[in-house]
Image (cartoon, rainbow, N blue to C red; front, side, top):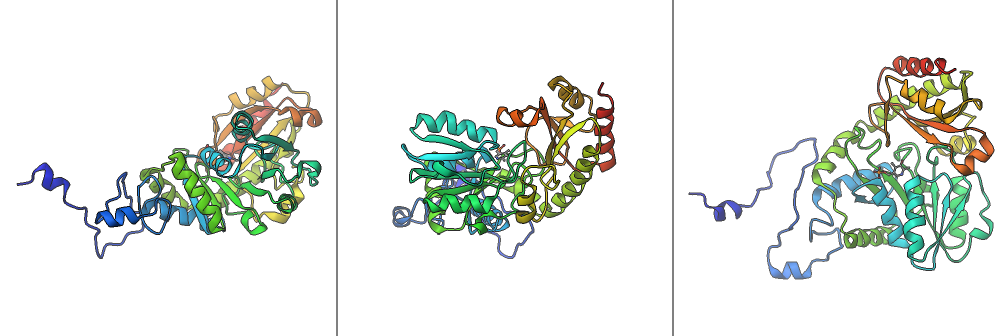
Length: 384
Ligand SMILES: *Cc1c(COP(=O)(O)O)cnc(C)c1O
């Protein structure tokens, strides 16, 4: 007869001779040791063995290896969200007294974390404009971490990444690149000498607008070990169910990106030809800041870009255009199958040059392209 004791003490067997194409899900908090000696000898941080499932499991290690390989790296630490990957990169590297240097078009919650939390911890937060190639006096011995985002959020300028990396390294700073826009498929910053490539896997890798995850991808064993220790100390855990979902979507990443790319390019060009549109901020179009950098560095473009209305329109008109769309949902994030349109007030540093009230950020999904294009053009035609 089965009792609770015999039930509980029956090890789940590892099936011999069974193979499938999906990611095996290992659910665990406790990792079981064969005896006290192996428990006492185990290394909490090493990925050679298993210690406590907060650190890693066969499931998380397998997904991390795939994510690292896509981005051209040797290792990845998975994190509970893309923002958690950004916070991990900071907390694993900077100390009181250090400087960090961010582009003005950096992902807004990244800047918010730096300004609100790092400043309180005694770190100095400095900024640069995305088109700047000479960081001048902001390069100093105290610069610990240089952030690059390629292209930047919202205004989508592609910076001269190689030049920025070289300058950061010349003063001994570490360089982190937020590479979420390209999903690691169209751009690999580690090959240019960056120390960290950050991915919000919630976007194209997850691909269905339903799972949060992030990753910090590295080449060097030392960088990975440092991130890994910080991640365990912070108590970051990643669910095997979420790993299953991301892994499941990864195989179609290249095909989805190609579809997003083709649709977004067609729509961006149609918008650029419309008289009610101001600027189309798509890295693959010459109207976008840093287009020449994008051309040199990237092998393709994804489905996220922004545009502005002609200078005679106000922010209310930006909102009216979005509210009258039928094929686009309204909300944050991007990279899923459903197209999204999001209103943003023009950032102050940018508006001083560009004379416009607001931007519309689009994430082009996998709907029929004609439907999306007609929807947008129809909304523009309805403007006064
Ligand atoms: C969305 C995003 C993140 C954060 O990802 P979450 O998983 O939503 O926390 C980081 N960087 C960029 C550029 C992003 O667009």
